Amino acid sequence: EKGGYEHFMMKEIMEQPKSVADCLRGRVIAEQSHVKLGGIHHHMEDLMNANRIVIIACGTSWHAGLVAEYIFEEVARIPVEVEYASEFRYRNPIIGKGDVVIAISQSGETADTLAAIEIAQKNGATVLGVCNVVGSSIARVSDEGAYTHAGPEIGVASTKAFTAQLTVLTTMALMVAKEKKMLSDVNLQKLLFELEQVPQKIEETLKLDEEIKVISALYKDATNFLYLGRGYNFPVALEGALKLKEISYIHAEGYPAAEMKHGPIALIDEEMPVVFIATKDSSYDKVVSNIQEVKARKGRVIAIVTKGDVLIPKMVDHVIEVPDVHEILMPMISVVPLQLLSYYIAVMRGCNVDQPRNLAKSVTVE
Ligand code: F6R
Image 1 (cartoon, rainbow, N blue to C red):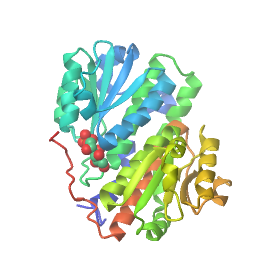
Image 2: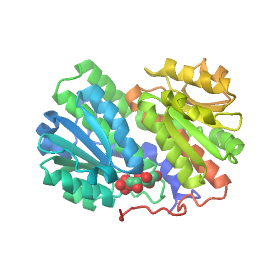
Image 3: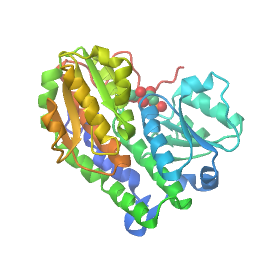
């Protein structure tokens, strides 16, 4: 049942080339510039004319929402807000007709997300669900939606559901951008071709497995970790930190790299491992300066970089090289080494990675 792996989590990490490909099947055909999610057909007009999009989710699904915020704003030019379902539902939110809510949930059963959807619907907003579990409560109550088709996720730490959520949300944003003619035909097609290549690039990234295991052994006894990224990789920093804390019980924090100097920099000394997600994108130069600031304070740096980077490897303690891809798609690649890092560290610490203490796969209580 674990496909020859010791844990479901590893099986699910390794399944990602397939789960992302399954998620794209029939929805994206770059050759024909085809991009379409059948499940949001009837509300396409609402989405195109939305005053704003409000994304509602919890945990890892909320991180996927943060990536989607940047993508929707960039390619479709629609303002997006990303809300924790638990905060949204209890604060008399301003929401109504003209707003489109995208609710993201792997299980489709998260109590706070479900309650937030009800409030949004009662106030006249359209709700689109992005769920993994077919026939789940959130999938049923949403006005329409698109499944992530990642297959059952058994490990409590969400991995393949996250990359599938990013796949659906990116596809949705590109579909709207196409309809609104926000992208040139050439640029749209180029992005679709790159999207089609993501499964293969995840496959390539998974080959870093052994290398990541070696790094994990060096840091397994750390008591703290900091994860830093900017732009599209900022939510990846949050996700990397969440993965580590939930399965290894090491305290970890994710931050937008520029926020470091507003507080967390005080934590940095030779004992502090700092993971930078520093791939070649529009914030690259800024991230390089942030790495310098950490090295100047003797922090130990593990950097996720784009293959072929010659600058960062000279500055840091360890590099993990991932394949190049358009920046909006990078989170689907750059999160993979962080999943593996947390997995190996947790296993080396003797933790139960599939069922970490105090956590449940679906949070059906508020
Ligand atoms: C993290 C994790 C949780 C869930 C969160 C939302 O690995 O699994 O943070 O992401 O409980 O769950 P869903 O997506 O089922 O609504």
